[in-house]
Amino acid sequence: MEALELARWQFGITTVYHFIFVPLTLGLSVLVAILQSFYYRTGDIHYKRLTKYFGKLFVIIFTLGIVTGIVQEFQFGMNWSEYSRFVGDIFGIPLAIEALMAFFIESTFLGLWIFGWNRLPKAVHLACIWLVAIASNLSAVWILMANSWMQVPVGYEIVGGRAELADFVAILLNERLLVQMPHTILAGFITGGLFVLGMSAWMMIRKQQTEIFLKSAKIALVFTAVASILTATTGHDQAQDTVQTQPMKMAAMEGLWDTEEPASFSLFALIDQEERTSMREVRLPYMLSVLAHNNLTSEVRGMNELQAEMEEKHGPGDYIPPVAIVYWSFRIMVGLGFLFIIISIRGLWLWWRGTLEQHTRFQKATIIMMFLAFVANTAGWIVAEMGRQPWVVYELLLTADGVSPSVFESSIWITMIGFTIVYGILAVAAFYLVYYYGKQGAPEEQEGVETNLHTY
Image: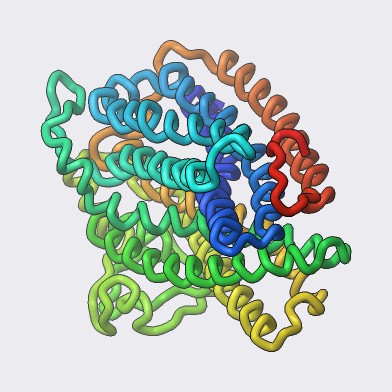
């Protein structure tokens, strides 16, 4: 493989691994804060025990997220120096703000929260974990701001072959950010909700502290149900924005080669990109027009027409992304999203009937859902990033032009193999730590006695 393909594989591997921890951090931080709020308001010792239990797991996830994220920033300068040179004036600003503001707040108050049990007043200690949760999600906002500029570049001017900042407010209010941000953060809430629900179900299956973990399961059910429904609505908004700003991505998501008016939604198709055709298709009439424009008769442009436009605008080249990957990743993401809605509503129904803690089949299903949340997040990331190809900055910089010209294939092979081995070790460590501390259950507490999180 050439340096370009190797660099893409390396960044893809490290990003997918890192993105396992990011959404879970977003949702789990908020749920830990909610559990502690319940303890603060009710004085129920069970909520305190749940806070420490899930807080311990959150610290593990947070730490691994930091370790895996640092490598990505190194790759910007190592494998993607031409990309960094082109976007550095713009891309570096939200990344710097994220590190200096959101991450510092997050890490500082997490330390205060960990060691603050029995040292800080309860209200101050509660405020610490809420600041951690808020900062975690603010961190995601700044990262998404940088990514949204890659999807829809705004507020810039080209000077000396580089994109330079011209209007920071335009970047701050980028239309892509306004639809991508709530969708991504809510997906993180689903991930956190399903994690708490799955771990609670695991403990109830083991008949371990059932009364305690029934409380966290109920909170997680409400949290997940609301987040999953809102994620579907924000996903619809994002799809409609994609039709306007990245029509080629939307056409690839639908395997739509030729323009249709009205347009039908593809349920299933075998993609032949070389022949530019889809085989054995099952389509729903009019539904793509509804998805794209909220009506039954609107036109949705196909990849053949868009390819001709791109060639006329940017010159000869293949501007169609890897359609099969984008097409099926989109269906995995959407299908699992609807499955999460169904499973959470089913859980609420069992709660209403008073049989939630007795329904072993549902509990086993939620453990599976806990893992499928990571699959859905990865599929969504693949749609967003691979659907933009062959551009690394949409219609401004081709991915092939962003790779470092002086990095040899052998160097990338060595680092990619090294990262993969290290990340494999970290994956085993992460699973072991979550399993080890998870199976111990909620720590024992006595009313009126505080203990430090790091000592149980």
